[in-house]
Length: 179
Ligand code: HEM
Ligand code: HEM
Image (cartoon, rainbow, N blue to C red; front, top):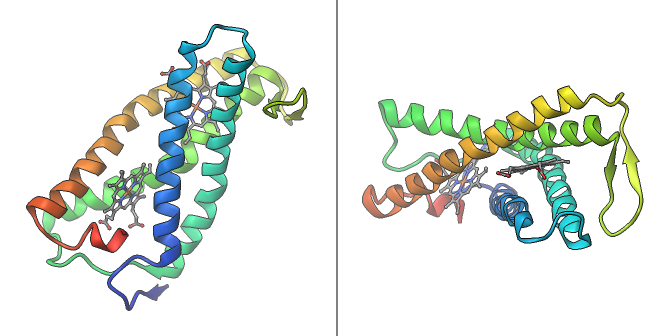
């Protein structure tokens, strides 16, 4: 691992962080807005399928992001975090990284086990999956996908509140390192 000799996360790490934050908000917004459109309409199908693909882009980017994180250690927070705060920050970052992989994978397996294939938006084509259909497993995975999605409203919310606290209350360099 190359320790960073600048005061910020690497350019790529910052780019990944903000691009993926936008995509995650988009994934949430799409799936939550589906109830605005009547079932069976083309527009609802498009909204749901776009949710799938935005999530898959997140999954693919997550691999590159982790590789970048291994290449560059971010600069320390000044003044350094101590004790429980440091542990909380580390744990929440591990949880957020895990979410970037687990959440799209749960969604993807749900679709493949329920439908046998991943539909390509705006076409009648789909990418076939390697699994036999299993409605029960698909339902269980979907349940965890929705549950994790709900839990992470709070984890992501807390992450944002922590960033605001660091910047405006603790007045340290946490946020400046990521912009
Ligand atoms: C960043 C990635 C993702 C996030 C944050 C996310 C989030 C969510 C959330 C919050 C829900 C539940 C919405 C509700 O409360 O009704 C949901 C539903 C769902 N998601 Fe995802 N998801 C992601 C990726 C994916 C992927 C990659 C797929 C499939 C390829 C997928 C397939 C589904 C399916 C099938 C449902 C149930 C839809 C329905 O009931 O109509 N998700 N997702
Ligand atoms: C507007 C929303 C967001 C803000 C203001 C924000 C802010 C920040 C800041 C300031 C850091 C640096 C923290 C530190 O080094 O201690 C950070 C790191 C991080 N953020 Fe966010 N973030 C946002 C959204 C998200 C989202 C949606 C995710 C993913 C679900 C995410 C995942 C992460 C991860 C995994 C790190 C750790 C980076 C590392 O040390 O390798 N962030 N964020």
